[in-house]
Length: 397
Figure 1 (tube, rainbow, N blue to C red):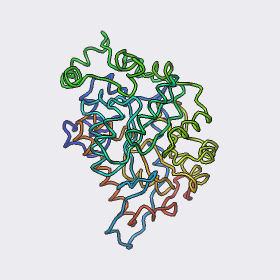
Figure 2 (cartoon, one colour):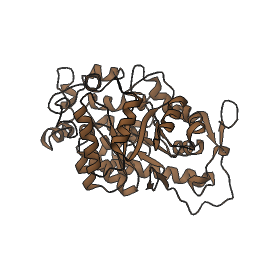
Figure 3 (cartoon, rainbow, N blue to C red):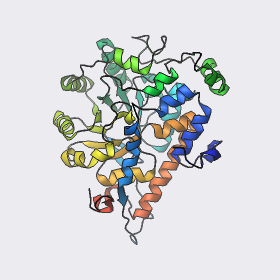
Figure 4 (cartoon, rainbow, N blue to C red):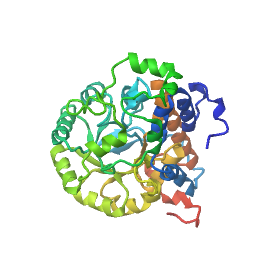
């Protein structure tokens, strides 16, 4: 449902929360591109639940303790982050705004936080390694093409990436009905059904057509799909990714990489324990933004039991649904090492490029800072479940 104040969002200065960036992006993007960012699987119930889950738990502040000198920093996979916030790796960013991953990486470096590039990124591993010194991960899709899989690892090593994050929830694609209805492909394929929307957004169209040629440089050395050959994301996942991905393959990838290793898409206690037994450095509790299995649990709903099971052995990162600084504080209070998200900056990127991402991350930083002060906490280490109450029974989860 659209916010009743959305009609006021006409320019970047009108954006005061993540939902405002979403509305500005909706106005500025052709509808197939906007709906790719905004959409999810099937009825999109899980996507909606990812954010709604935070509302089931309330913050209980402490007062008169002094919160004038804050330290919001955390250490994640061996690198210091100035905020307990990560900018999750997402694909195809050049489609949303011509600044693409370069904008996100620059903002992440400015704020001193982790960012990631996708296997399906529109900048190369080499460029990311050379241009940005901040903590960075390669989000790794496990392809059928073993040569491509090996090349991604070697390129990440040469570029001195800090971590590889294997996405484990995409052995087949979710049913992304919005993409089917709009005919979204990468690169875009113009059809009688969608060409008017592209024509009605000339700024986007001119930037896409006349600036740097669209490419997926981490893949195009091995496959044409997605760069020279238009394909839907659903078809790409179903044809290119290996549905046989298993624990043994994940262990082999960890060994081949030899550095900090994270699994993204862990949702059950059993899988979290197996990941810890395997010796991973971190897990990201994630359901891919609701874009894979609709009807699955929200990451925040699973956070407490997973932290209780393995939080003393691996770093647990809450990924998905984050739209407010209070969401980050709730996740940290429940035991997460950090919170992360993709749409929280993708809407801003689509709305206004690098200035949009900078404003979005700045707003979230301000919200986290304010929430910590109002909670009476001077550092992330002071947050605990003592400051949480469940709305259902008033107890601590």
